[in-house]
Image (cartoon, rainbow, N blue to C red; front, side, top):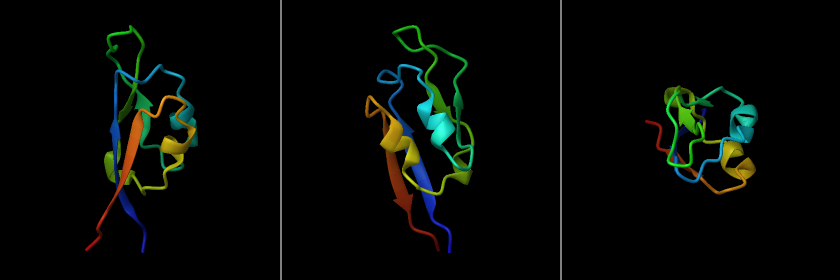
Length: 74
């Protein structure tokens, strides 16, 4: 059975390198349309229902701005 996940993104830590977007195998992440306080466009989870809690986004984030949670599947 496939895992179900949830991610949290700290918009203020995100510097807009977008490594996480490229690392996501199921295209959960995309560039946000609003800037953070530093003036960069952070990442947003636009397709969170697709998240499989693989942790790729967390592992490639150089600023540790992403937290991944695995949710129970019923």
